[in-house]
Length: 379
Image (cartoon, rainbow, N blue to C red):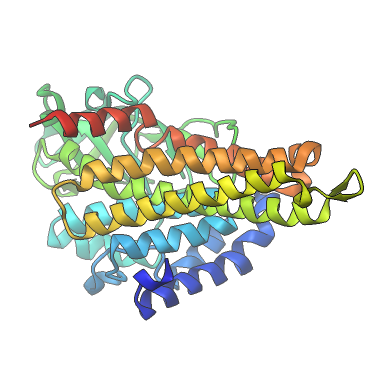
């Protein structure tokens, strides 16, 4: 697909790949085994502009496009899926402040977020509201120049380590129109965190509950108008879905590369398993499906950049198709490795574990089908 990109975009892609191969890939197995959150390495990504990919340049952002972001996250995930995914989440939180925040908020928060002096988490999901995000219960009650926020958030990446929480809370009972967005610093009294969840994958980033017990937040920390928060959240998810798909693609590409190399080296019945037609056909299908997923992903990113009216549908289609395909390719790569693929030494089982959640977060792939079909049938 190189012919579709400018020289500058190819340079950005190559820079991200170099960073992934030098700073992420050599450590990914250790981070997974020890559940280490590599904050120092994540902060070094900010020096290349990867912490503020589509934040405006006047506050230190790179001012790039969604297509550029997809290029970057595919390459970063080749080094480590879990770490790349967290960098994507930080970018989404920063973008929300940049896009919907006041000028005062932009100037206060974004210079430190773009440099990753501060790290951000995004808080929408709750224990009782996953796919039905608009049913969230966390409440923000106005008291003078402050809001008092009480409730909890579930499955929050970076929770307990991140410095800033971009959080959705209910300011009225008007369904989706009653949700507002707030910026909450980590050291705010009443803000605490649950235990680090024991997860199947994404082990190089902490996942905890965010607990709010009478947390007082200045009204100046509300992003946009009251009641606009759910709209902001949904706008952020179009790009978030592309990034998660890109990260799945990068991980699957690494799994395919490992499977191809192993098939050439592994000998059974007197010859390399790559010489058996069954292996050849499997490798051919993996390559074909992964390339088809890549084409769909970059088409969706281009539509989002162009503000195409069908962009939301395309982002949902890309997220569904790419993450399903990536998981299948990674699982097939494990199968090619046979019993060795089940061992952590070969690095394929980690990719399978990491990619499984990409079919769930940023909207499950079942919800993607709802979005797609609803858009198809709306006229």
